[in-house]
Image (tube, rainbow, N blue to C red):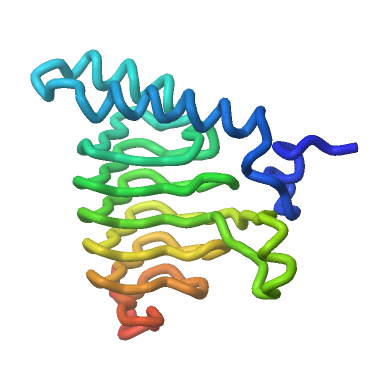
Length: 186
């Protein structure tokens, strides 16, 4: 029989209130509190806490506090990834981010979702879908990236967009829902 964590990582319905998952989120909250309250003139402390929170963060990962996530260990980044102020990653499933990708303020990345059926939703079970963001992607401020989305390398997502479907590489896309506006020459 699978644990709730194993179900979560497999994309199956799981109970987020499970003791193991709750304890892991509490550990992440403690690290986030330390990170978000660390003075900016202590960059080595910021790096140290961030490495504990996101062990698979690439070299040069920088996240401007405040930042929030569920677990941290499901976030995997390439080199030189940058997040501006007040970003949130609900990482019940893997969030893979390519090198040199940049995120404006208030970006929200959600792997978590809930059943559409009200009776299922009332069971307090949820599920997650992985998100993948390529290399050299620029995500504007106040963008929401929904569960299961893939954004291709070198894409630009316009501010305020809600990304509900995959976005190919080398395009500018924007809107709610986010749609390709034009190709970008490289």
